[in-house]
Amino acid sequence: MAALRFQTNSDELKIQRNEQNGDVAITIDGVTCDTNDITITKLKALAQLQQFSDAEFDIFEPFQYSFKAPVTIPFIQKFKNNRHGVIKFSYRGVDYWGFALKVPALPNKAGEFKLLKLSRRGQSLL
Image (cartoon, rainbow, N blue to C red; front, side, top):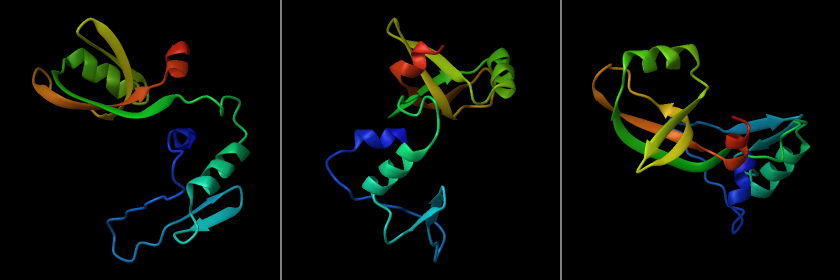
């Protein structure tokens, strides 16, 4: 929810579901919002009520890295042991970090990676 701070010019929130008649409702701390009253303002207010010590700091930014690269067997083994870890990659001499959204599983073949960008705050915790 911390990523909601990046959307400031509108209170509109579009929710899409694949299922037919898919009612959407979320409940946080006993406050329920359904499809008729979920707004960015309400979600921001609910996020601020959460009792997390680092809640004011984003650990990711709403940006997705997509690239193709070969995968090694040692990488696949490390990833299986820690699927929620951070993946580091370099492009033109600059290092980048992200959380795995999609990771190829076939060793020694180029596959598509999709990573959610780790924030500067998240990088400072590495």
